Length: 192
Image (tube, rainbow, N blue to C red; front, side, top):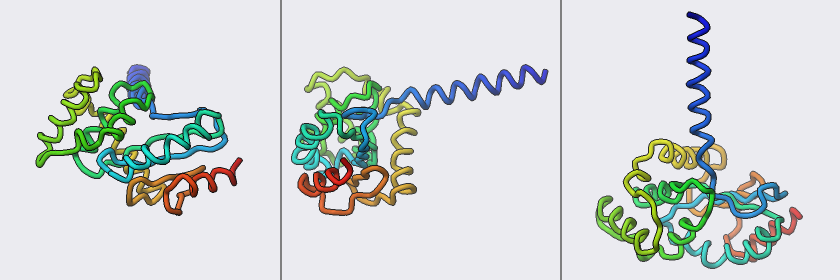
């Protein structure tokens, strides 16, 4: 009887470990890069959208594509629309940033509505119009993805004292300067 209990315990421990590991973090750049940038963002945050429009392309060109750095996107939803969009961005579970980038680039097309239901409808319409094939209801109701997103937010507050978006962490240190490419480049150059 004792052996059966041990086997059952190991089995269920393995299942929960596998489930947690199955959700892939959205990462751009060399996974083994010397510099790790973590971006805590909310998909409804206009400053985050500006980061993706004004800073990210140069960062990608000079540091991510060259293998000098990688960026990990962490979820820090500020409202229910951002929470659901975060779940959708993780739903394909491929670690790719395509949906995430599209949501930021087209934020004004889907971030609207006076209720959670209306926001969800706009998000769903946007995804369809852009040709993304995701099972919307499955994505926003997936408990593992929901926990993954919420744990990003909890980790951000506890470990890095995140209280606004976007918040950038470079090699485990909070970037405290004004977030523009010039300031970010200065900080990165010191680490190369």
